[in-house]
Image (cartoon, rainbow, N blue to C red):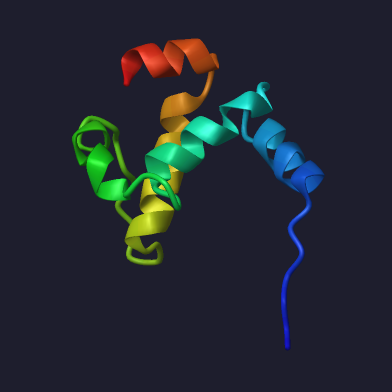
Length: 84
C-alpha cells in the first residue's frame, strides 16, 4: 500500500515560505477549510468575502486554501479570529 508521510516541519517551512510567520494559525485554517469536527459549509459566508483565485487547474478545495492563505497573510491568530 502506498502512502505519504507529511512532516509538520515541512508544512511549517512551507508556511514560512509564503509569508506566514506564526504556525499557530494551522488549527484555524483546518477549521475554516473543514475537518472532522466542522463542516466546511459552515464557513461559506466567510469564503464569500475572501478573494478566491480563478483557475481551471485548481479544484474548489485548492482555491479555498490559496484564498485563505492570502487572506491570513500578515495576520495573527487573534486578528484572524476577530475578523471571522
